[in-house]
Amino acid sequence: MGLTAAAVVVPGIPAIPAVGLPSGARTAASLVFDPSAHTEQTISITDTTGTAHEVVYRFYKVASYVANPVDATYQSLNICEPVRIDGAAVDASGAPILLANAVGGYAPSSVSARTGITATGMGGATTRQALALAAGYVVVEPGARGRTLVDATTGVYYGVAPAAIVDLKAAVRYLRANKGRVPGNVRRIVSSGVSAGGALSSLLGASGDSPLYEPYLEAIGAADASDAIFATGAWCPITDLEHADMAYEWCWGTNPLGGGAQVDQTLSNELSTAYGEHVASLGLRAKGYGRLTARNLDDYLLKTFMEPSATKYLAGLSDEARAAYLAARPFIDWSGGRARFTWADFLTHVGARRKNVPSFDTLDLASPENNLFGTGTTRARHFTLWSLRHANGDSARLDEDIPEKLALMNPMHHLVGKANDRRSKHWWIRLGTKDTDTSHTVAGNLHARLDQLGDDVDTSYYWDAGHGADQDPGEFVKWIGEVSGYSGGGGRAAGQSA
Image (cartoon, rainbow, N blue to C red; front, side, top):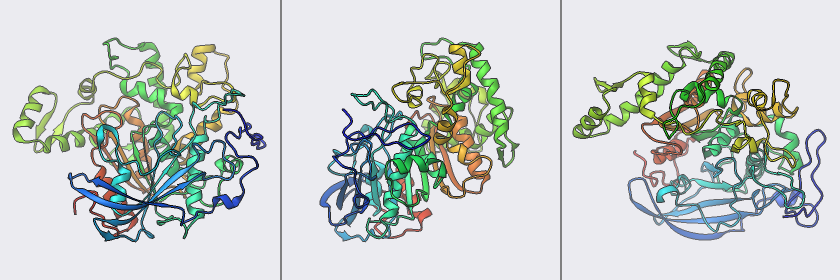
């Protein structure tokens, strides 16, 4: 793909190539939503109880949510508005809006070729988007640039950090700028995402209206509106990347790789030790633990998340199935309807770790995150001083723009110290206990800080589940209605309990 218009240049930041622009720049008029430009479609959506619902909805395609798209293939969005559910008319003008990103691995995500709602997800399950539509909510599916995008003519990587979060913010601004024209309540936007998409969802929630992104948003012609969102849903968020290697070794350092081999314990111990200093610097506190440190973080995670997760799982089994499970796992003490075990036994139970050391800023620059922090025609860069110096010597220095890019990609930057008062105040965070794609401390720290700030935080782990698990999608849809105060639109169609 070659450049079809001049590169977008903003003083103080690298040039942004204008890939895929039509001849002549788009005008601000292109950001006005046309409520008449839709098709009406009918779909059968199966809820979490197995019941099928007939949903008639309006499908809108927005060619681009910015006036000066770098690549409109990715900087576009689709909107779905329910009008009838099981034959009953629905007025979704005041409904919450689910902004569901599909980013994975910080790779690009496009909805430009879609002709309807994304109704089926992994394993054939009904998506959160479809469940939300069947509950009477408006669903927005935005595309976003990603780290692998490279211009075929210039060799410039145009989807590296912070492109993805800038795009999602621009999508929110588009919706909010079209208040009264776009369906749904733009003051009740709820984001969702998984893995890297979960990280971006967390970042979107934490960084609402932060001025740090303004030059990037101006460069692509984002609407002049707020990019703050009301609530955040994040599944297994891969975030806090500058400390992710340290956190990973603190959590999984002694766990073997899939083949049974141990990672280099000298490197692992270096990173794990350094993580203690980082945790102390955050000033996190939790009820019953006081200040969180590397010394009590394991007990905090165990008692706050892991044991309750096992308890919920075991309580849901039949007596016979529970007895068989416990007999095969004698490390679990089951008494009084509660599961208890040690952190060491939990780590042994999880078993193999997914990643080597270092896990994110790899010494060979081969990780997705190395690519995420590429720049210009450079595909990948180191983004931690530890990895850079282990690869290139003790005198090596990080590129000058790296600290800024890290701040732009880390929700904790907007929560620690003087917290952003325009952040989401409602949070839904989910992970599997056997997810070794990142450290459990990453989500644990995020939860602790949000709880410390007084936000409404619903965090839960799925016992024995791996990366990307979602075992309560109907409850998430119900939660959206509860926190947004919305009671219209047939809210039980997603299969939620009353």
